[in-house]
Image 1 (cartoon, rainbow, N blue to C red):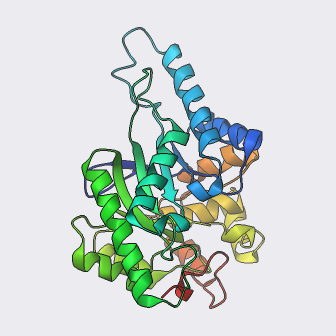
Image 2: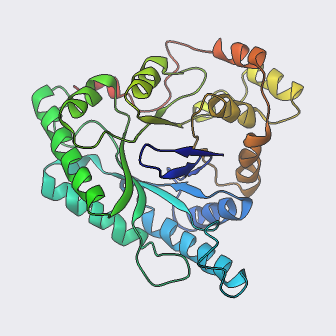
Image 3: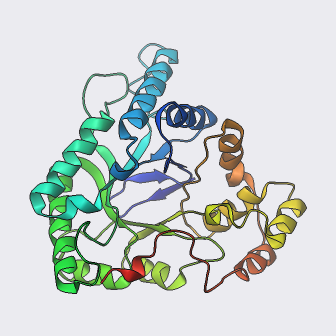
Length: 304
């Protein structure tokens, strides 16, 4: 299952999230995911694991190329992994810092075209947060200017061919609209928290209206929804796991997902969410979990 961005770049709909994964645990999780069939890994500068993620991907791609018949490496792109990373909020301080932040991520990931020593661009680069690190959240004009300046640098990086797609994360309509008013390139992606308790319908509708592809993170509600009786009941009826029910709830609405786990069996199980077939009745039941207190992660409503 894939999502095609406005520029034709294709994103695998199930990716591995790597938030809080470090060192050997991160490496093992990435390799477990890739061997299970994942072809999308999501990281970020602020996760402090880009080097490990890049090394694990390089090892996997090198091994996969060796296993191909002679001459097949250039034709078969199935093993190449889609990589998303993100700009740290502190790197929004000025345009030079944005550029340095991107270069640092690219250097740490150290991505190469499969089976060669030729560097390749990062697939998707996002502004991680609508607020600039170190700047008071209520400084509306200054925050808006930092977002605008940072986006212009991302546009330049994209036009230089240094990344295949660009976007934002955790941006609300009020953060996006000023960018849309002046941008050369509309953000191709907005990654934000989505699950039945926080469906974020207004933000998703705004993104759809402007041809911005939403990507869901925290699809399991940071684990809080796994034991919910409604989720458990739907899972039991479909002979699947609660995690797969929640992931499929998002997928059937056209939302790519980024489940995170350090456990190989859970990583493998999460990937099977694509095989689950929920019905409209299941969807309606899960939709009833929406709650005004549904947010589990960072709250961008506080950023002016």
